[in-house]
Length: 101
Image 1 (cartoon, rainbow, N blue to C red):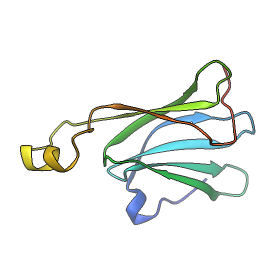
Image 2: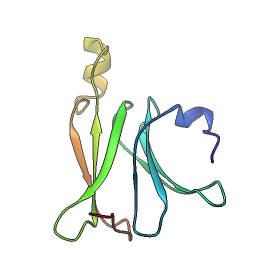
Image 3: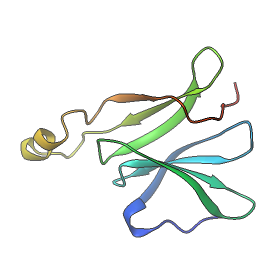
Image 4: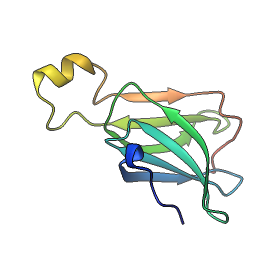
């Protein structure tokens, strides 16, 4: 449904929001993107302070928070010093959409 741009790198974990749009964690791309599966267009990009984003899901009281996991596997000390949050979980708010339970 969508051809990733070079900087978006490799698709990894995904989820769907209540509007039927697809959210994709871009491994080695440092971001999560929101796609319209009907038109094949990228609607939104959320950049993160780590390269290896691995998955995304909605949560919180009303499913308006997105949680994004990341990896640190294969990163040497120099790489980790530039991305000390690698391997962590991030909470993103204010997206304007909600996930499905």
